[in-house]
Every structure is written in structure tokens, then in C-alpha cells.
Image (cartoon, rainbow, N blue to C red):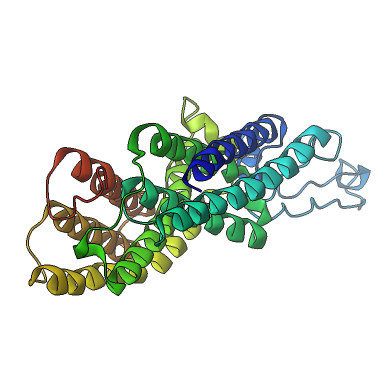
Length: 336
């Protein structure tokens, strides 16, 4: 089962890679969003035509331009429809993502069966779980909001990079849990921290794309702002960022509290200034600061979003930096 899990990981990475390629084709040959097209031409909400309003002063037919589509809705190309190859590539990208997610689940299941425990015992397994939560969250979001499909390129890119790092750098053989981890709090704490981290990982994608789209709308055309031409409208991305973080933050808070209770049961204290505990607290403070800034009218939305991006960076430090460069009570099973 352990060997099968390793082989399935390769298949999952290839599936996400194919999804990323298909999303890239859709992104390249698809149409620009409404805001991007509107920013490139003068605003003409109404147009009066006909001979009646000329020098003779007569009354002629009045033609009023139809209102633009909703923000974030793809604009048809010159032929009146989206490119067939873009539509086909987009559908194929979603199909590959679904298949890769199914294989991703099989990777976790076979790893857990081989280890005879939940597959969360080390850093490698934890990253597999976090990325799986992120991709499932993306598929649910895509089902509810199909107009966000262009973001799939960046979600698939994140999946490919993170799973490649997990398989090439963080991989460790299956080992039994150490006694301190052999507790029902192992399931409660790690499940909630992985779920919240996966949603926060997903929330970082629209946060970064909002900052790019915001710069594009302000006239910046250099890379990476040029990527903003085909992503959803800035307001849509900003609201999505807030909703994902608002949903994940209470789960993350509970996970930190559950970790403290588990620490008291395992080590006889709720808080010991372990590097992992410190950085978890730092991440919690930054994300709380983002939600507070987002609810404060005087704080501009780009400033608040930058705080969310900073929170994501602290989470990466907690995941990689602490486990690789520091020693603490949370160091189990090699890299964890």
C-alpha cells in the first residue's frame, strides 16, 4: 500500500499538471473580462443616432446601448462567442482536476491504510492533506461560481508545486506514531488545522489575483499585472478572498485551542513557546488583523488584502521554516 500511495502521487501530480496546461490554453485563447475590455475603450453608455437630431431638429430613432454584463462575466470575442478551443480546454481542465483530486484522495487513503492510522503523522502527509482540502474547496467553489474558472490556472499551479515539493523534498517512509501523538487529540487538532490551512491556501489565490487585477485596472501593464486581463473583476476577487478567510479563521482558532489542550495532556502545559506554537500564534494574529482591517471602512481594500497575503507567508514559515530550521517538541517523524 505504501508503494501504491507513492505511485499514485505521481499520477496525481501529472493530473494537476494536465489541468494546469488546459487552463493555460483557456487563459491564452479565452476572452478578456468585462472590466478589462471597458478600461481599454471610452465609456459610451448611450448613443443617439438618426437624422432627426441633426440640423433640421427633427426627431429620429434613439438607440441606447445595452448595459454591460455583470462583473467577471466573460466577454464574447469578435465572432460573438468564445473560442471553441478555449471552451474545450476549460472543460478538460476541470475534468483533469476532478480526476487528479480523486487520485489525490487515493494517495491519502492508501497511505493511511499502510500506516494503520490517519495519514497526518509527518510533514509530508500533512502537506498532502492540506492540498487535498484546498483542491476540494476549489471544486466546490467552481461548482457554485463557474465564472471563476480562470483562477483554476493558479490553483492547479499551486497544487503541482506543493505536491512536487512534498514528493521530492519532504517525503519520509511510514513510521509508527510516537507516544505523544497517540491520542484522539491527534485527529481533532490535525484535522482542523489541515482543513483551515487548506482553505487559507485556497484563499491566498484570489488575494494575490485581486492585487494583480487592482493594479491592472489602474493602468499597470507590466508583468505580473498583465495577468489581470482575464481574471474576474477586482471586487469579485476581493469578496471571495474575504469570504474564504472569514470561513477558515474560526476553524483555525479552534485548531490552535485544541492544540493547546493537547499540549497540556501530552506535556503538562498549555503553552511552552515552542517554535511551532509561536508561529501559529503569529499567523493567528495576522489573520485576525486582516479580518479587522477588512471590517474597518478607513482601511483600503488593497492594504487589507496585503495583510492576508502576509498571513499566508507566515503559514508557509510555520509549515516549512519551523520544521526545517528549528528544533522543538513538534519535531516528529523526520520532517514534520
